[in-house]
Image (cartoon, rainbow, N blue to C red; front, top):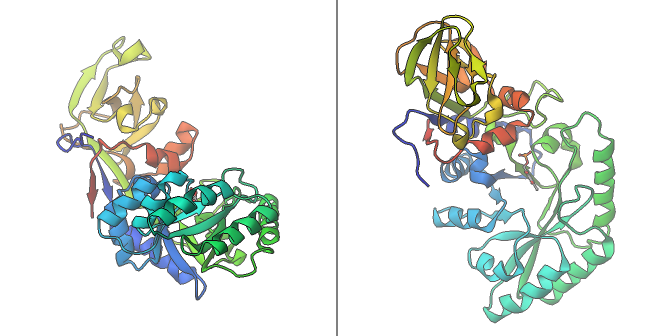
Length: 373
Ligand code: PLP
């Protein structure tokens, strides 16, 4: 992957903000609960290793990722704390995961049955967290009988498996209407009835569940978006005032060309924008290949503390904005963050694009360099 280090477009990640958010979460947690930092998808685009190191410095107890390679990348960069892979992994990779001392979600019996002889052949033991599907409909055991069989199978093959955890994931923990959440929680309790000996970790809470359903228990929090300083519910539900999250992601660029256009002059592909009067137009070196999606045309960025509209189609590597007046080349452009007295948030971009802030952050491409403060 080529990183555009010499282009002037970059994401600045405030590791202090991430540490602050972790500290706040720690203060809110119950005694005995452990805090796992969710750093999948390149730490929600903030950069896997720098974020993991900061989180480790902030005292997290472990990490969650989505895929094996993310976990291995952590291990190869000196992260020794527990790492849980939340997604379903191929059974054939069980020995590979065990070699790196990883914990993995297991969502069906087939995984255990297939992995067992592979692990035995290499004298390896894998840490397992059984995933329970209580209503998310994604991965996991859905009935008591299969859970019982899975636990029995692990007990029969203790040389290959350590039953380390059991968990579920809520689909509406960020919603004001908690009826479906309660249904899932009840289902979790029902499924747990067959677990006679609780494993070390029983966990149900992501950021939203930790904020709005603190009482739902579990002894491990899987903190994702909250650690990056964003409200898990977007605009739908207001955070309580005592959770003072600090966003950690700033996205900036600069003006590389300024020109005056005249009535009738068009901007960008498809001539979707035509000036109706004399206007100052600035070119910004960021495009949809960097994750500022084509549908952001018409939204605004900040220059000198003023909102400037993106005019014309967003190109692969550049877009144009209408400036209030001529500005010097190199003038800072803020897409996410503060500029003057104004602020643009990932939530603003998400609202405009009709999506969620998670997706806005995850869309920012690898070509955009990350700098750390
Ligand atoms: N747990 C699981 C199983 C997840 O899939 C995710 C994220 O998608 C998280 C925890 C973290 O969620 P959040 O970023 O909303 O805290």
